[in-house]
Amino acid sequence: MAMALSRLGHLRPALSRSLPALLRPPLEISVSRPGLWQKGCGQCGALPLSLSLFIFSFAAKGKGQPQARVSINSALVEDIINLEEVKEEMNAVIENLKEDYSRNLSIRTSPGALDHITVTTKDGKFPLNQLGQISMKSPQLILVNMTSFPEATAAASKAIRESGMNLNPEVDGTLVRVPIPKVTREHRENLAKLAKQFTNKAKESLRKVRTNAVNQAKRSKDTVSEDTIKLIEKQIQQMVDDVAADMDKQLTTKTKELLG
Image (tube, rainbow, N blue to C red; front, top):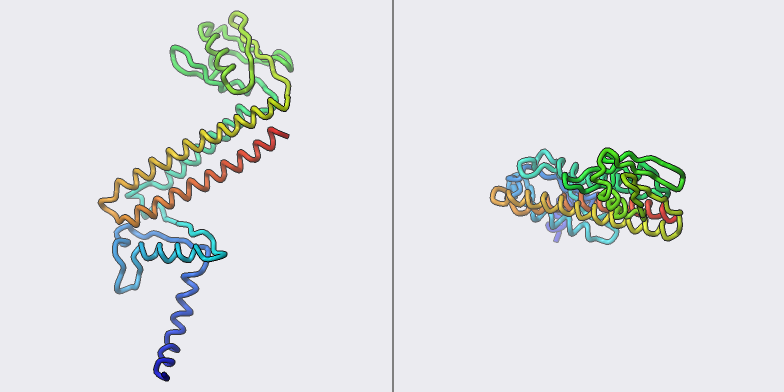
């Protein structure tokens, strides 16, 4: 009994050093070179990746513990995937969403709101402001002069009508008259619905970025461990979740602004 207590006394300092390291938040996993994750290190005591994931996942499930997050040094997995490029693609998606909000969701229609409406012609697709001269005739009327490209007048009128901005253009020769609708509750609600459509479309683009990135990582499954691939997938999904959460915040803010 005395011998057992003596051994326990020797173990106590080691336990006091190791337990806080396992339970300390936030939980981050740093990745070393992929090849090092395939086996545990008997000499240094390093754990295999699968066991490391088990420990971190288990700790994260404890009551009051934060959700485990992966933190991968992109330089260490650059032979598998360029995570910085993936991040840039995701950021580009949310920047495009912000531009859609800015261009198409103004409470009061202005000439600038029509600039980037896409007009489909037999020669391709063009922004409206490249085909016609847009001006404000009065607070209630916008004019689009199509003299430079008269053959695209009908296509321009159609594009304006189908822009989702609740506009009903009228064609007069090569002139397109665009009456500005009154700011009604219905108009505000339609803009809010359009904001949600833009956001859903952006999330679809975000999912495509994720799918392409995951597929790229999986191409290295013959040269790196399965656990490494899974860890990279988790990092990619984490990036997607962060951007999607930002999109939801943008939508909430824009919806409140539109509905007043």
